[in-house]
Image: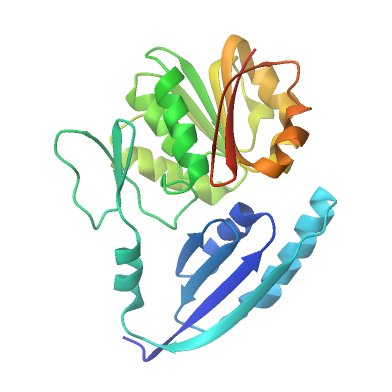
Length: 273
């Protein structure tokens, strides 16, 4: 074991999920705290700060908005931080499902999902994922065709697949797609199709379309999400800060809002076409 490790503490006013995914490509472990404070750990003092600032500029240009981001690297004495990290990630019960990491044991008498944290967003600990997963359990049924857009770990599609749905998944991040494939394999469930990209490449109209992303992206791909949804189908949107909710609703006003939940300033909405 090396004598020192390097802790990077990031504070951001926006785009927490995208920044977390970006850091996941650079660092040995990533711990997200309420989507605005992110801590990473690595063995070598890699120059991630410069790359992070470049990525910040790219996000600002892409979305046409400015946001505040700070990053500080600290050298620390190694006291087996991997074990400390593992201890910080606890299993969680979400409706009918118990979600646990590989270093924990499954729970007897309930349905279990094993998902390794930090590989891609989506372990159920964040309100956006948890509430979207609860809505999947509420609305999905056997035989439905389901599309998970921006799938991350694939946990939402995984839930639908376990309930008997035919699931398709996509993510603009190729690494997230590979993670989702591994998650399905580890949990012995099958998907119908998976691709690197977005909803504009969907070949079907779906009974349920899922999108747990961020408000700006949900606005950008609103037409594609609605096009992929069949008449009478449900569109589950998550990753929405409450302060951005009205902005988002303006792009989905041609659909009927049938369900809503807000937890810790994070909103999840269900629309019907």
